[in-house]
Image 1: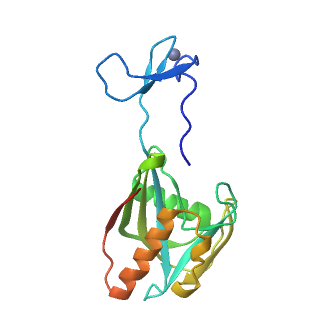
Image 2: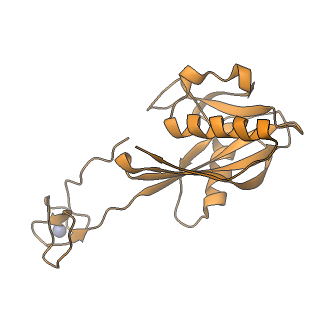
Length: 184
Ligand code: ZN
């Protein structure tokens, strides 16, 4: 989801144009044509979890999306971080909202720069405490998958696929690491 360019000033609502500000800044910014406010746009964080079931973590919880984009595709529970919460709190909130799962948060697992769309995606591992799920309106269905059952061709987002691949690779190795990745 590439963020669309700004059209209107956040201060006065008039039109903005993208140009170099007058202060020596080296990147074009959305500058208001009327009040001259310079708008600085920065990457957004997407936070989520890899919720797993069983002592051996053989099953992973995926959610079938009931919203665009990628309606009907499968994802790990994740969404945009909110102001006033930590990354782990945001990941836990999304897991609660999208899956209605009971779980315990574990360590940070992946951090991925998605430069093209101006996002940073962070996934934490989480241990499910129950297999009863109560998904919210953004989810058609929440269910557990073994590695062999993962619908690899029906995964909604590249960062989810990358995270799942690393989860199962680490699980085979018997040790969970921390992974960073730049998505070209
Ligand atoms: Zn303005």
